[in-house]
Image (cartoon, rainbow, N blue to C red):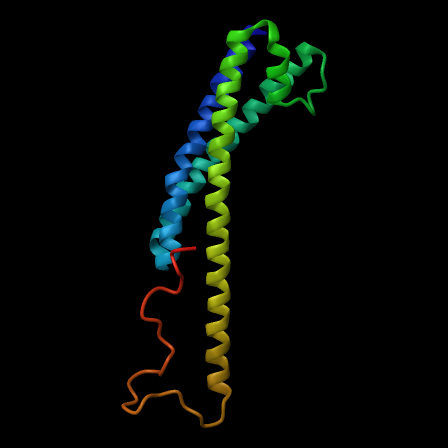
Length: 171
């Protein structure tokens, strides 16, 4: 069981590092969404996909190790959690402490990643709503009978072009 614990701790550590590596990518994604930089978003999405694939592989490995530990402990492999495994390690304080520390780091990293992802989701949702709104304005302008939104010099549409990006970065 000691080797399983070491493998679990190592896998959780690698998983935390993979999630931590996602944080700057997600923060860069936030900036790209705000700037409406579609080219950067494509590059970011490709890098994000690689890191998510790595994280998913590590998650599968962690689940398998936890299931093996559950079998050794006589617990249900489908429902065992890292928290339960930590509780079982009362007689092995060194392993218990190491597992608790990596578990706490992983939880903190995942919470930060969720916060950034929620912000990005909201920004993208707002962007989609703005695009839909603009499309509706364009459609209604085309359908309107003879009305015009042009200024007196007919070179620009009055009140239609934002001076800065579409989003307030203070959100």
